[in-house]
Image (cartoon, rainbow, N blue to C red):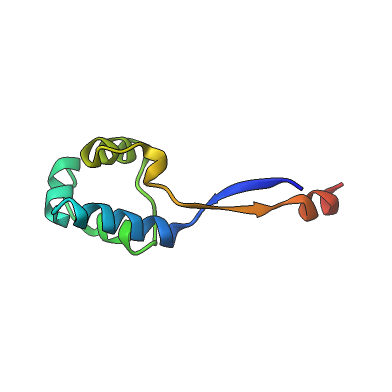
Length: 87
């Protein structure tokens, strides 16, 4: 079996929300730290509609005092069936 990580947008968004809330930060705080003109991107991240860029993930990891891989939540999926179909 071959298992590959696939980012779970919804779980990652919930994780970002909980990380922000647990540190007493507001959307506005994050917006200012990241230098974003509008907060919509942050709402989209927390709602699982999109993911932060690599640059933003690095800044968020420093802000939350954690590693980038502690922000992103992923599931492992089995691609062995797909491999057989391709061959």
